[in-house]
Length: 373
Ligand code: T4K
Image 1 (tube, rainbow, N blue to C red):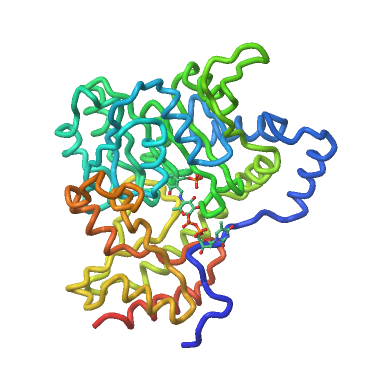
Image 2 (cartoon, helix red, strand yellow):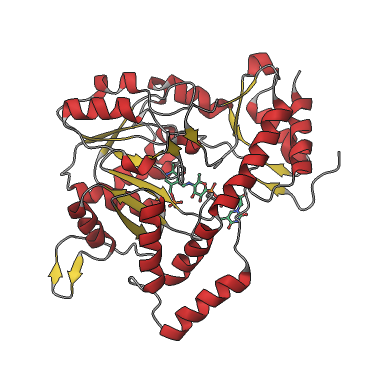
C-alpha cells in the first residue's frame, strides 16, 4: 500500500459552508460588537442550553477555562477532588490550578470511566467533590455516582469534554450532577474553533460562572468574584451556530466511519473496541482501539509506528497519564490505578472524522490487521 500523501491525521475539523460563515461575519462587522456577550453569543447560549437539555448554560472561550471556572464557582477553600487519571491533562491541571488536590480513582476496564465501586473508599473529611470524565463520549455510570455523592453530600462536576450530544435512554448527560463541562475545541465532534460551556442546575451557580469568566463583574460597579477572562467571542459563537445546524449530519457521517472500522476489524484476536452500551446515543467523538500485546502479538506502540510509516497518524489518548506527567513527578502514584495505567499503554485512537473516506478506513484497517503476529 502507498504511503498516504497528504497524511491522514487523527482528526480533521468539519467546517460549515464558507458563505454561511461569511454572512454571520458580515453581521458581526456591521455591529462592531466583537465579544463580551454579543448577539451571536446570546443566540448560541440559548440554542445550546436547549440542545444539551441543560437548565442553565454558560459559554466559555475554551473547555479548560470553563472547567476551572466551574470548580471556582463551587467556592471550595482547598481540599480534595476525586477524579480519574484516564483523561486529558486538562482535567488534572484544572483541579490543581484551582488550589485543590486530585485524588485518583481507578477506572473500570470496559469503558475506562470512573470505577464507581472504588469511589467511597477514597472519600475523606477533605473531599469536596467528585469530578468524573465521560471518556471518548462513553458516559460514566451516573446513577451509581449520584448515589455515592448523595450519601456523602458531595457535589458532582462532570468533565463532559467528549460527550457533546450524548444521551442515555433519551436523557441528556448534562442533566446529571451539579454541572458538566463541554469542550468545543476544533478537534471535537462539535466545535466553535476554540470554545466550551458549562451546563448547570442552579441559577446561582450560573450567575457565579458569569463572574468567574468576566473578572467577577456582574455590573460596572458590582465585582463579586476574583474572576479572570474566559469569554467566548462572536466569531467563535458564529462558527458554533453553524456547526450546530449541521451537527446531525456530522454524527451520521461519523457513525458510518465508526461502523466501517468495527466491521473491518471485527474478530481479530487481541484487538478490541469499547462495546456500545444499551440506550446510549453515541457521538463517535473518538475511535479508541485496545491492543492486548500478548494476544495480538504486537504492542500498541508498534502498531502506531507501522501506521506512521504509511502516513497515518493515530494518537495515544491518554498517554502518559496525568499522574505520570513530568510536572507532577513524585506527587502521585500511577501504580495505584492499574487499570488506567494498562489502558494508557494499550489504547490507540485511530483517525476519526466526518469526511474520512471509507476507502481510507479500509486501508487503515488493512495496516492494523497486518500488524498481528
Ligand atoms: N477535558 C478533556 C477530557 C479533554 O479531552 C479536553 C481537551 C479538555 C478537558 C480541555 O478542553 P479544551 O480546553 O481543549 O476545549 C487535543 C485538543 O486540543 C484538546 O481539546 C483535546 N481535549 C485533546 C484530547 O486533544 P492535542 O494536543 O492532542 O491536539 P493537536 O493540536 O495535536 O491536534 C490533534 C490532531 O488534530 C493533529 O493531528 C492535528 C489535527 N488538527 C488539529 C487542529 C487544532 C487539525 O487538523 N486541525 C486543527 O485545527 O489536544
